[in-house]
Amino acid sequence: MTITEKRIKPLQPLNPTEEKLLSMVDERRQELIDLLQQLVRIDSVNISEDVYAERYEIFHFTEKYLRKEGFKTQLVKVPFPGGKTDQYYFNLIAFIDGKATGKSLQFNGHLDTVAYNPDNWNKDAQPLSAVIKDGRMYGRGAGDMKSGITAQIMAMKLLKESKVDFNGRLQLWCTPDEETHGAYGSDYMVKHHPEIVKTDATVISEARSQEPLQTPVITIGEKGPHWLKFTFYGVAGHGSVPKQKSNALNKAARFMANSRSSFKIPKHKLPVNTFTLLQSFLKRYRLPDLIKLLTHKTVNPNPLEKDKRRIGMSFETTYSFDRIRAGQKVNIVPDLCELDVDFRVLPGLSAQELFNAIADYCTRLGYKVELPIGYQNKQQSIGKFANEPVDVRVSVITIGEGFLIDKDTRFGKVLARAFEAVYETEPIYTFASGFSDGGNMLSGGMTDVFNVGPEGFNHHNANEYVIIESVIFAAKLYLLTAYRYLNS
Ligand SMILES: [Zn+2]
Image (cartoon, rainbow, N blue to C red):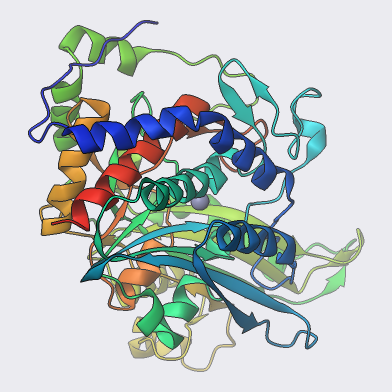
């Protein structure tokens, strides 16, 4: 499928110094690829929020690399609670100061990856192989998000080597646990070391293409993860005497099965929606091409996949039942069932409102619900539950607020002009269904947190890859943005 993007004349075209800077990225292409391969080959799996998995190697490697390049670096140790004394995570900070004081710009990315099952990957492109094929690099973390960090490191290196003047500070911050929502990374640092990470502006380099777009977008908002654990209580018994109502697993099953019809979460409207997104798509594509893109059927390699991805899903609060545990033995009725649910909540809907919806739904099911401490429970006013035992207890795995930032700040404009100059297309602003470290940063009082990165695919899935050319472009965008912002 050949689609052409509408080229635009950038509002602020490249000047000779900037052209020289960007050509350096092309000249150093191989170095960028080598660095990305090295990072992908270091296993930095993040198993889950409650399981410690050390990631020393990737942090030491990256820190050493940056120190050798002449940056000042710092590794902030964050102990893993309940762990042994040598169990901790790192946040890596590296920076370079300009010739005079000025603004501070921060690049940010996470060095952890989600887990992988090599059996599901192609034999010739295994998770830690960093194999290059047809302009793509394969590997866990190739897209999400060692490519983004690599592009940012290259941008910092080249700004430094070019010896062009700039003021203020350019800083890189690598976090250890974005994939489990940043308790030791973004959340920890904004709470304990705001003096280090609160810069004037931050660019997160998550690779996040908005399918079907073929060039990057700037993400200015995200839904907030509300990961909740539902523990259902029942009564044990002999498997030969079934208990329809008090089998804890049956209770959870009813909870899941009725949710589509009876679980009502209040709807919120965002200023960004499918319509505004399509409008901005039209600034990048001619209508016939856009129709081609939107109706293009991707060949799905897995015949079990029956779900289609809708763009509109990004603009709704959603939930997914993602883990369930119950039972000990085939002939024992389970008296306990744990169900983990991944809610993704639009900004504007508070956790209390979500808990209200959960309480209403439980009332409809006839379940007495206990909510986490600190939240009001609507069921308390319902007499019939007063003397009943709790059917389901809800606890928080993690809660993060969604957000939508102002794209037209001073930094936002610098980023937009740089985007136009590098890609020669109209910037498209999107709202992401997934989260990044950005939510914790904004909750912690940081401002001007934007997200734009290379194009990666199959994130959190087998055969993850990044388009190498897009990493080169991302490095150019970061370099130009830094140069312009720190000279403005
Ligand atoms: Zn990521």
